[in-house]
Amino acid sequence: MDEARIARRGLSPRLWLAGGWLLLAMLAAVFAPLIAPQDPLAQDLMLERLPPFWLDGAEPGYWLGTDSLGRDLLSRLIFGGRIAFIVAFAAATSACLLGSALGLIAGYFGGWADRIISRVVDVWMAFPPVLFAILLVAVLGTGLSSVILAIAIIDWTRFCRVIRAEAMSQARMDYIESARIAGYGRIGIMLREVLPNVLPSVVALLSLEMGIAVIVEAILSFVSLSISTDDPTWGSIIAEGRLSIHQAWWVLVFPLITLILTVLSFSQFGEALKARFDPVLR
Amino acid sequence: MSACLDIRGLSAVLPNGQRVLRSVSLSVQPGEVRALVGESGAGKTMIGKAVLGVLPKSVRIVEGEMLIEGEDLGRLDAKARRTLIGARTALIPQDPLTALNPSRRIGPQMTDRLVRILGWSGERADKRIRQLLNEVQIRDPERVLKSYPHELSGGMRQRVLIAAAFAAEPRLIVADEPTTALDVTVQKQILRLIAQLQRDHGTAILFVTHDLGVVAKISQKVSVLYAGKVVEEAETAQLFAAPQHAYTRALIAATPRYTDPYASLKPVDESVLAGLTAEIAAADKDWRPGHG
Image (cartoon, rainbow over the protein chains, first blue to last red):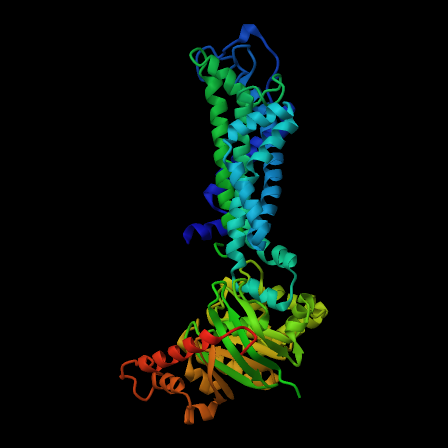
């Protein structure tokens, strides 16, 4: 109860920490050309494998050190954030719209609609998601839109399952029956009575899914199936860092920390938002 | 004048063929309160749901007619039936906790129906709702209208639901055990409110309950239901003064009395139930839908 009360006043530390990090990372990504201390693509073999600023041998202006080609790690992380966030928003939103709509229909209408949608979800979920993604990108070709499409195609089931279950439990409530007695149409009831009650879950899932999209994108860049290899992405930086882990650990560690913080923040932010959105928890 | 609600020989079955309603006939005259009393599982709620057109999908009506103000629901297409039920009936539900949409404020939730279904202007609906909230003795309607359901107590929510039921001036209200989920102290007030509004508005009520004490207080006529069958129907005073059927007598005998609070609770007499069950089983054996 205390936590809920704090959440209402907007003081939940979870919401602030997670939201703060996301805001910071997003602003950095948006204003990357203004903020990044160096050109993320500029190679300089004289400056290769510089350590982060607190270690001996660090150069000013290269805060987190450089990779094996002498490119500034911080600038690459900031620019990599652009792709991470574009993918996060576009892929998660598409997956959310598709999955939530189908889940709402399956859960509220039941019957044939539910049987068909549920079977498709079952089949879909039998595919290992990462292999499925790699396969899809291989078929669709690499590039930003393919990655977004692939993530949406794979992950809509996550929304569908949860929203279906929620819509089903809402559909059994007496207020739905009252709405039917009053003479509302089925679609009207679905949109006006059921949807607002599943919205908190949609929001929480959407935020969680953004985190997952960031991971999938990183995995795809890790296996060089994401964007063209020139543009830095967190996954491709991790892939490069892995090769020089014994000479320059920071090239692997900093993108990993960035990735983990971002994914964690998305999921925590979603949970905190759900608590604020839900009139009963509030 | 045609009855407000007229049910004639209504039978319903489950998918496995088991009968849940057995040729039920009952009528509610305009402005009258008809109690429908029986144990849990007797099919009281089922009858209410059948009238309102919200039977579960698994329950199928196999014979009989239901008329609302002379209009046969069975002869109307689905849309016309919905419109008729929506315009002339309302429900006071059993559980005020789940009968209001938790994510919508009370005000819009109450006016919505008047505006969307009956085509009233927002202003008129708003005025009407305030008037009804006043009638159910809600002291600060402003606060209630702005509240979410969870911010109100069970008794308050039930008042809101009563106000909502009467707001659209329905001819018939189905009250499905409206006091069962409430505190005993609140039950009495809610019952009195329903009786008051019923008199003021002249609305006919089909009052579903398992509580004979409630029956005595609120209704003019009673139908006693057992296993989906009407075993006795009478004027309320008549029923308590001279119950005709053995089951009714057993039911009345099983009612706890305030005059003797230390008496142990008596269950309904086993031998009466056994007789009834045998009678019903025998009738079911020969029963074919449409042949009585």
